[in-house]
Image (cartoon, rainbow, N blue to C red; front, side, top):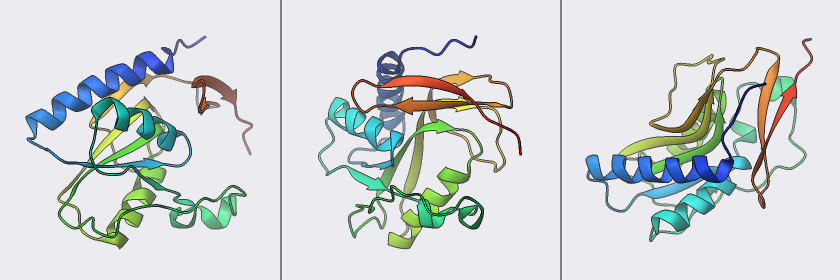
Amino acid sequence: MTHIAEPDKLLEKLATDLENLLDQRAIKKPLMVGIHTGGAWLAEKLHKRLQLEDELSTLDISFYRDDFSRIGMNPQVKPSSVPPQVEDRHIILVDDVLQTGRTIRAAMNEIFDYGRPASITLACLIERSGREIPIQADVVGQILELASDEQVKLTGPEPLAWEILKSEKH
């Protein structure tokens, strides 16, 4: 059985590593954007922990996914809430699990529809194998090796917990 650290412990590590990275890059007033659903839960906690001034933003990338025609409409589509001014802003993009990279690519496409940010820093609680697009996180809570038929899912928002699911091959 694969061991995954408790989400709250990983969140603390992620927050510390993110603070250090922002200091190294001299980023003072970043805009935090969480990807629905798990990434938004994490972003809310990170936003409080880092005491960021600007309001927390969220994205629902359902319509931006390149596999939209294959997976169909998510019945839980939520509106995105990104401020109209992302031009030249430093953005922290937060997601729960980085696997294929497709969710992150879709999120960046949506962000660029609002404007051209100065930078995007990617923070993910879990990074696992299975990348299909060359995207990697800047800060990661834990790198996880799972079998190809396993998926990790964050449940929450209170309490945050992990589930490892077996997927059926088509």
